Length: 208
Ligand code: 5RP
Image 1 (cartoon, rainbow, N blue to C red):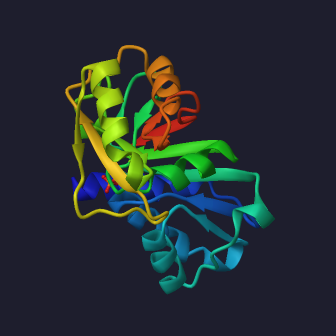
Image 2 (tube, rainbow, N blue to C red):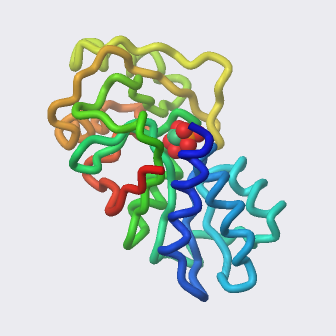
């Protein structure tokens, strides 16, 4: 698996062009991309990062971390995923970075998703769907998710996101219409973002 992740991360380098500001996701696959990016650091303008953990890796690699407000929209975003269906719709957020990941994906012209083969599924939902919630709305959102979808929300206790929020992981879903479910869950007050990347799926998927 580690080799597959490394290959996927390294293959994403073919999309990096000189002078680019590169959007950088979060996770172990992306960590390999950051290692490869470091070897070309003098030829890129910098990176916009989706998490504090990736920012730490980028700075340690000598890559400047830039502000999306000053440098967006971006030509390229490279990120991993927890599941990927044949339409390139994704479940993300296993690393709790879904909200910033979704912002950068939206702000990018080309979203390259880097995964190993185990992440490919026909129907999304085997991996529990992460939802970032405002802490005071945790129970409200959990009840609405249970009533509306039949999925079983479980509070990821001990995890606070980079934005100061909490995560619910929704188990037992079989996501036939990812765009509709993403839209429905986004309507619940207290939901910050949903780890379904369906309205804005990946453009390219690299399977290591
Ligand atoms: C973080 C994510 C990651 O991209 C996802 O969890 C995949 O991680 P890894 O590459 O370590 O398997 O969405 O929020």
